[in-house]
Image 1: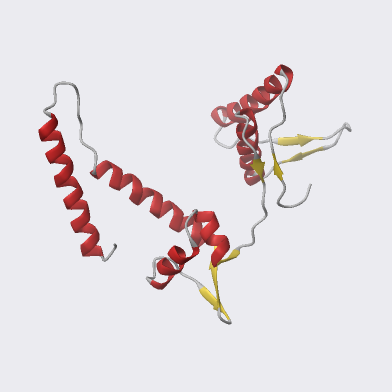
Image 2: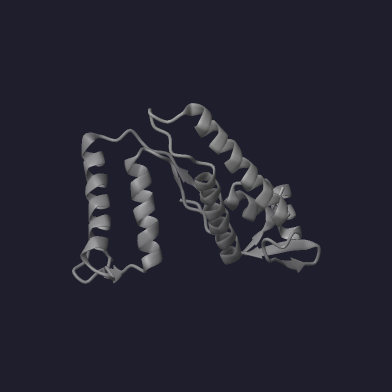
Length: 175
């Protein structure tokens, strides 16, 4: 398998799906059993086993979960320093949007000649900050409505919430 090969789900037999389910159950059950679960890869020989690092365990858990759901999986090695295109791809945003964030100081970077380089940890931190901001915006724009609510009042509450969020964004210089 090459470094960036995508594995598409094959047509699973009932036995394959059952086996994936057992692997997933084993990976998730150990988490609940102890504060620091230990996971091993076991080979064919009597003494062929090695403890898996937590990071490898997390990758396996995500791969098995995706395969159980019939999704394709790509494992792609990434260096600790990313190009702007790699960072934009990881964030699922356009490169120009990323460049704007860099220019506004939302994300630290270094220059290598004329090229910008961004630390992977900074990109992951930025992604988490964006995610939290998005959830906060959703919370700010939501109102409780049930069948007894006055729809006109609910719409007025939503308008007020949108205006308040827009005002905060203008104050922060975010457009």
